[in-house]
Image 1 (cartoon, one colour):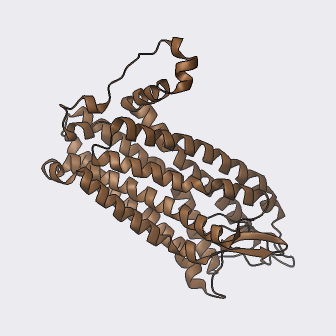
Image 2 (cartoon, one colour):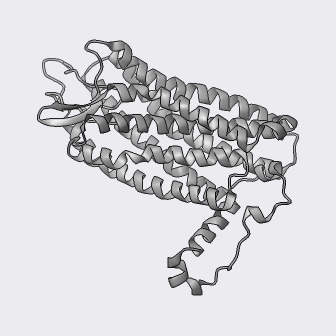
Image 3 (cartoon, one colour):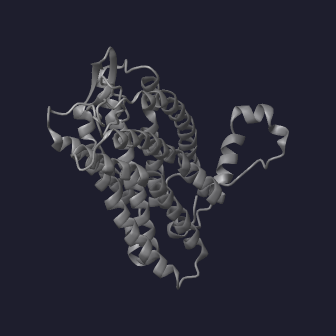
Length: 358
């Protein structure tokens, strides 16, 4: 969870790294007032934008899945849980935005809670993207086994396991985050045992390993096998579905990898491998920029579904057409009066339905 930690030199803090030292760069102290001023307007603006876009987009995905898709496949279960993960992720952003603009006024309990929610949303999101890759792998490479394994029951069970693992991995955020008064200003930040570098390094390394290294390894294996199989396959439905999930994975890597790299560099900085005022300031700016970029990721999955899924566009139109505002003001627009839900097309098998994108 991002936080702003003001020491006598006014420096920036993230949930993962506490810039609590004054760095000497020659005879003077490393001042970071510009970093602090930049974050005080840049971060709140971006957080509120991410909150609004992420909330609207993922709520639409959930409504479409529940009302029209009816969760009839393992893929639908994972898509629903991915949208819920993104909502977890954006839930704390209005509080965080107020904090960055002013100070943390919500107390230690909410500080712990929102830190835990943020991490849970992140870990569960990447785990569900990983499960969707495995789901595609089974559907394309192991078709016979997939008929038995890719069921709603197994999808629900694996989703529960993912949530349990994500919540467990997020416990450090619940334990160490505290509301602390510093220089007449309350902040929400991790507070580790004094001079204990182990936890300070463990948190970002856990983030790197569980949030990038392990999922990327699994995804790379799955899509390597999928591409080899599809090279000799002319099933266009399978190719379309794989393409959508592949784009979801690539977008995730593009938006989260820079932040993971900066966190790793911050670990090296904390251990003294490299230091100095200039490096510290550059890392401050890099963390603000890359973390903000990573936050926008939770807004993109609904956009991917909309532009790559013909059905999703149809369901969105239907969803808006059936609300009272449309009926009152837009009835003369001339859109078709009816669309058919997937429930009306009962002759299609689950495997065929799953091969198509939203």
